[in-house]
Amino acid sequence: MHEFQLPSMTCGHCAAKVNRALKQVDPACAVEVDMALRKVAVRSDEGRATLAEALSEAGYRPA
Image (cartoon, rainbow, N blue to C red; front, top):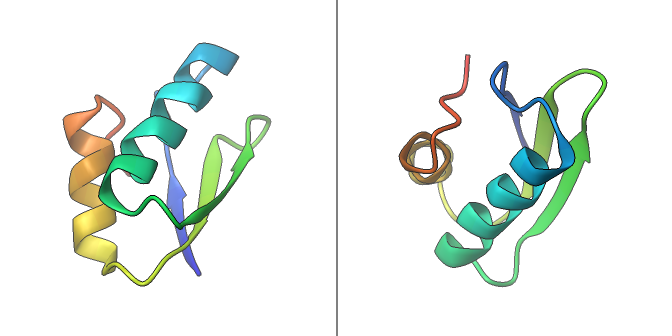
């Protein structure tokens, strides 16, 4: 399980975009979004760096 703090994720639209970006990298991943804490947890076989890069490219750079 990889956890990322995403300070720029502020709304449901942001959460959906984050989810899509992660699913493009690993369609089988499980994504849990916590809007209140601006955090996302990802269960994936992909490496942390790959997931962080996908988030950054989508405009949500992990803190």
